[in-house]
Length: 279
Image (cartoon, rainbow, N blue to C red; front, side):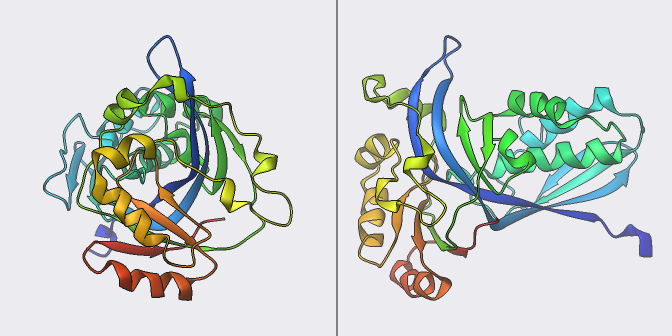
């Protein structure tokens, strides 16, 4: 049938260009100060009308039950639905999992936005954001994506524009790191204050030498292979190299795609992705 083609939504990854841990709340959630950058590496969500909700995935290792963030997002939107149509969602997974690239959070945000329109819920963005943060601290970022400062648990977001274009090389070792583990290992005595982002970039340039990721102090000792990847990346003409989120992805920021592609040849033993930021 010609009309049997799915509605396909791209669901982009992100990197934390820089990340500080600023404290912990009474509920146990940690607060951060970070610069989120959406990138063009993406999963695909294929939506088809169905008699009942069903979730499938191209990766057989991923659960497709109520523990999946797509499922959680779907059920979270159900009370607001004005249209009774159910959907079958097939998730084509390209973003590595447990890699600090926010794939699951991106998937959840894509489901929220799709159903808000197609179920005619028409919730305003602040209401969608309230649902998003209940699903995960990275989910609110993906409602608008691009480049945003994230404070609080990641839900206090401020869109910004960086004055430089660049390319990003991702190195993804086959190691899955639990964010909860990484936070649990972090010594709160090392917390820092929120960034004054004017010190990191201005209208003309980005001060890459001031960027950091405090999770590296936890992850690199526990997983020396990941620290070694960063050291190897630093041998290339990078503007900055570091861990994304709690890892395990290491990324390098380069002036352009040509330099990033040349560096990519150094990491033939790992899955790699040459990506561009979404501005």
